[in-house]
Length: 108
Length: 120
Picture (spheres, rainbow over the protein chains, first blue to last red):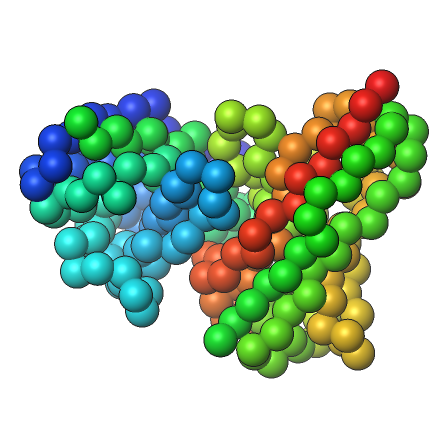
């Protein structure tokens, strides 16, 4: 089945830009979606279809997807952005969703 | 406003049966897939199953096929996940999720989670 690979962790200072990647075979041909999960809370969709932001998600959050790598970018990082971030695609071969293993973002 | 309200904490013993629920509101229940995602302690997200309440079409992750049963009640707009025989390895948080449309692609709404604790 399709595999999505994320780095286990990333650290960023407040006010800086965070980049979280998600790698998969020819992932650029699929639609990628991103969720964040703050400590003790349910996941929340932050980016859909590569780069669309749902209502209520700040413009600081953006996404891109090409080749074998999808990227979630968070500009002007705030302490409240500290969370686990998960990528997800729909695997058309198996007809079910696949999640990446998650990246824990720490705001120093 | 879309809301998915789940039963909260469930405490059972190994071998018990269990049915957890997810009450949906704020949208047309029959035109969106609804399903379940498992998160074991300090682990990632695993999709388990989805159901389309409009026609009761179901899809299962092969890992969970035969281990759980998903169902939905259109009259009460409630989805369920059922185990006939719980194992200690079923201890996890279970999230109810809604697909963004009639097409399965991503989950735009999540419930608050049901914590299932299973003792031996």
